[in-house]
Amino acid sequence: MRFHQTTRGHSPDEVRVAWRQFVDEGMIDAACVRLPIAQAWQRSRMAGCNPYQVRADVLSPTETLALIRAESRLVEIATPFLAALSLAAGAERHAAMLGDASARVLKIVGDPETMADENFPRAGSLLSEGTAGANGIGTALAEGSYVELLGPEHFIQGFHVFTCQGVPLLGLRRESIGVLSMSVRREETAVKVRDILFCASEAAECELLSERLTETLATAGSQEHILESLRQDIVQRIAMARLQFELSARQIAAHTDASRTLGAAQQLIQKFRRQAAVWRNLVGQSTSAPEPVDLADLVDDFLSLMETETRVSHVHMAWERYERPLVLDDVHALSQRLLTAFLNAIQVTPTGGRIAVVLAKREQEGIVMLSSRLADGSEYVVSVAAPLLQ
Amino acid sequence: MKPPHILIVDDEGDFRETLNLLLSMQGFQVSEASSGDHAIMLTDAGLRPDVILLDYRMPGRNGGETLEYLRSQALESPAVLLTASSSAHDLARQHGFDDVLQKPVGVDALMTTLGKLLGPK
Image 1 (spheres, chains in turn purple, orange):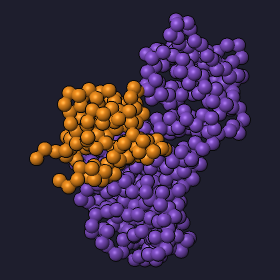
Image 2 (image 1 turned 180 degrees about the horizontal axis):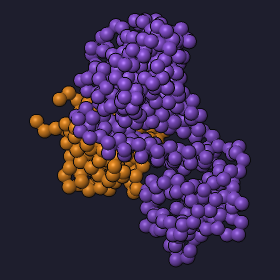
Image 3 (image 1 turned 30 degrees about the horizontal axis):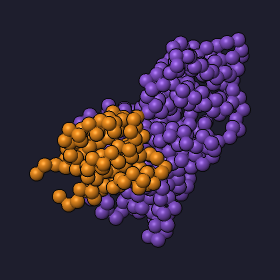
Image 4 (image 1 turned 45 degrees about the horizontal axis):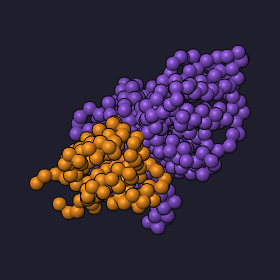
């Protein structure tokens, strides 16, 4: 959202007047202040935040070190993204920050002047709305989504020189596990880094998720080998997204258009997420009840997941007929049956061969049929069926 | 002075292309091979990279088999294994790689590793 949209066409000075009115009298000019900001101000005030405080609550060096150690994995994964965000901001005054789920700053990377400012938050600073008022870190966590605060939209007066953006980092169950934030002095810089900040948060989430895949592999049992291979193939997506992301940071720093590169990174991230979801359905024991499954979507995801496997095995998969049976089945068990069918088909098909993938409806079932020509000329056919959703 | 020459061996074209661009931005000369056999063809034709970056999981020869063959042909260029395998370090040791980087890998980690292998300029 742009400033003129976010403040409904009101200038920073007008918002500043609204801020003072709220701070002095507790009244919000709803025509002047965006609803999420008004709500953040209310939360800040109710939590007792002092709008004129100069420095954030900060842990001792020992406590900060302990905190960073406790969150070492998050810090390690986020560090290259912070570096790239800082690179993208270039010579502008800026700070790229990582916070934990409680709004404690874990790491900050910025220009030398900002880093030397002793009033600026640092590792160990608490930026919850209760202590630091509405800000890019605390408010992103409170809202559970991207926020942008322009100048006087910050609750604390000392932050009015900044434009801040924050995106929560979400775990497997969509819980907040941290937050990435950018603070800049000029709104133009915020516009410049907005898309890459989004990309950074998604890519960092995916890298954390990819580690969870490795942990989950321990429950894979007899299929561990193939699932490990597929896991590596999935990680390749996020590896490519990382390179695209880092390239985009350099393009932004060089004032060249990074939109295509960021777009490519986002597509890879979405592909990773889909493939990771399919992969997780393959691992471990089923505890799920039957649910509606679009068989065509599931097969699409399998074909995507098996891309590298088919390439390494020198076979080619092709849809021959295309229907969209909607079935009712345990998606874990169905995924397992599909995996077995695909792997068997790949194994028996000669090098250079073609595996036809057909979806069909037969009486009360949706069918996935895989067929190929064997070395002796005979036809190999395997099918997986699931009850049609009535 | 000629810039160091890096050979990227990976079957994923987009990955190679983007890595090529990033390394070129850092001042390296870069060549690409889409498979182990392609890398062998290039070195047989006289290519002598200063460092080889090898993916492991590829059609045909995997990265380890490719390196073993190159070493058998007396190619001494330091080789870095780029892999998402959870056994990355074991694979690297098994096949004689000089270093290993676990995917996803970023430019900073890559530069640190290349710096170590290439030595002071």
